[in-house]
Amino acid sequence: MPPAVRRLLASTLLGSIALALVFAGGALAEAGFAPVESRSPNANAINDAYNWVAIFTGAIFLLVQGSLLLFIVRYRRRKRARSEDGAQVHGNTNLELAWTVAPVLILVAIGSFVFWKLPEIQNVPSANASGGRVDVEVKGYRYYWNFEYPNGVISVDRLRAPVDQNVRLAITAPDFEVIHSWWVPALGGKFDAIPGVVNESWFRATAAGVYRGQCAEFCGIQHAAMTASVEALPREEFESWLEDEARAQEAGTSDLGRETYLGACAKCHGLAGEGDIGPTLAGNGLLEDPEAVEEVVRNGRNAMPPVGRDWEERQMSALTAFLEGGGLDGQ
Ligand code: CUA
Image (cartoon, rainbow, N blue to C red; front, side, top):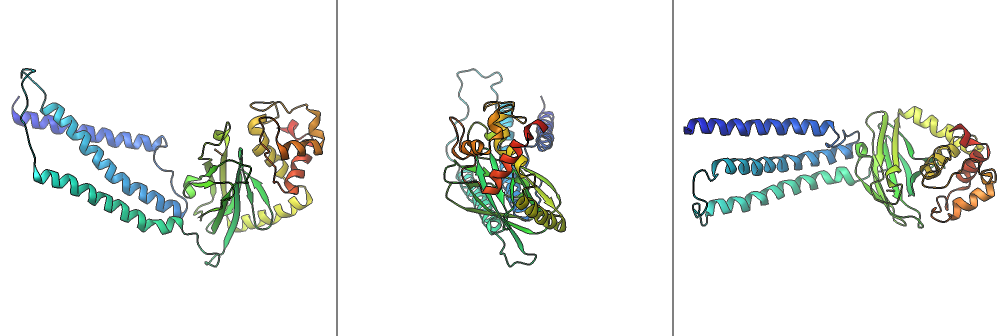
């Protein structure tokens, strides 16, 4: 084959491989392998760091795989005898300098960029910053999230938050719990919920909507069902919800009982109490007895963890009222 034809073939081959990789990259992004689109400044900074690192890893991937293919084609055995050695090459100062210096420069570039972005990711905006701040306590339990607002409102698995306002999260777990991990990718990084330790994180949702999250630390049999969501609402809407909810929870007319059942009970006992990992609850006379329910929920039983050992009274009575009122039949 004349060299010109060979070069043409080789460059066509490399070109199609590069093109295929670009399409594969697009398909992977579609399939959810690329980072979730960010909706908070700290998540933006995390994605910037991801993209910066991806430029280097992508280039290295193309370089290594490209030369591999090139070498396979170009230096194949052809008609040479199997026993014949190839050319013996010893030392190449320039090449050795290049593969030592280039990685150092790449690591410096990656390291400096990440350290430059780090404050944006990590530093929780001050409570006095303009626009104020909402502080929420986030607690991980097997297998749900309990949120508590400064005015005492409790919610389960769905955190409501105002748009365009800083929200500080104090992420922890009760001392009888295991380690969970709070992660809503569109709104920032992953933070462990460790018994007895408070980890701080924050977000400022830039658009209204529901952002999905998932417990990111293997915590037991229903770890996969331990999802979370953040519902970002326009500020006035959020504030009126918070006030109305506070009144409803004090009066015992809120949806907290149902929310607690769905979060803390249904993941093991089934939506309508039909039983799954945990025993069937539907039709169990115990549900009509608030004290018996409280005893099991506070202390656990057999394989069941004490899912509500440290609940406040309002959450416990919301659950027992929901069960007593035949709440399961409506599921
Ligand atoms: Cu909680 Cu995994």
